[in-house]
Image (cartoon, rainbow, N blue to C red; front, side, top):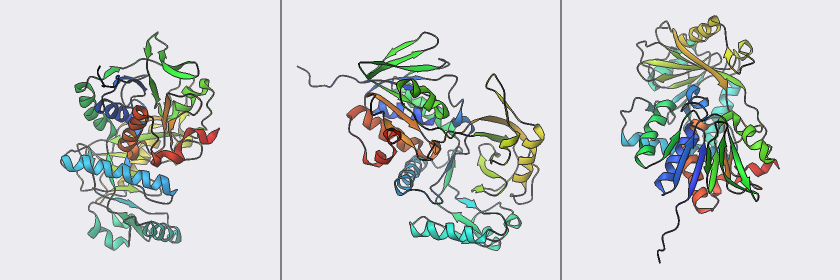
Length: 373
């Protein structure tokens, strides 16, 4: 008689980094995986994420530790091929508005207290720490975190999908909205509005800001604080910037092919959501964000928006990630977090382990969905 355990069948709902990463980790451990996407891959938050890899600032100790582990997994991927244009470690640079020197110094002191690599720089010192920055835009002090990096999630997802297909994963794109099926109180699979039925031993719901709505019919209430946000990609421009910048009027990171990715929150009031679920924003506001970003770059090159995407940024109601099995719906797991980019690889690894073994990982203990019950 064979002692080989039966293959576990898992359906993953969501084509963003959390869903794709978990699917690949499941396949690596021998599971059979179906990956369903409502639209295309990276069509929602993963396609419009600034994707700054960090654990800067102040947060709970478990969240900080999980984010550090997340950055570590990216460093392992980076070390395998440092020349990937879509994954780089050039540090992070942040500063507050003029007159908020005390807040900047307090953040720096906190980061130092937890062992996070943090340098408090005057404008004159920035050129020695990281290239391509307009130091004249810094009012007093800036914090430079040398160990931070960035990733372009659409390219990472494409990279992971190569392994997904090579290991026999089944991708079902454009499946429309999906719901979890339950029998005897346990998740048994997924049904789609198009009529698709997928039986499974376990289901992962990783639908970004839509995750709470997908699990609500199961009697699960996950508070949702997801705001509307935008990511702008610029046209190519010559520059030497390597660091991600987070500043009072613009967040900016390098992007493949000499472009930039831009983000912030001051323009949220200018975004209009339409009845069909689409969004719009005046072109002038998009250009204003590009102009603010231009001020941060040495030589102040003219930045022109090439494209922009608007949608909901996944943020749980209490700001902490929601990760793991639903307490009263065994076999159904969720992955819902603001830091999907930083946590993408580590969460995929840990959730895959929990799904396949049933053993709960201690690093996820404070992030269980049951805390809202």
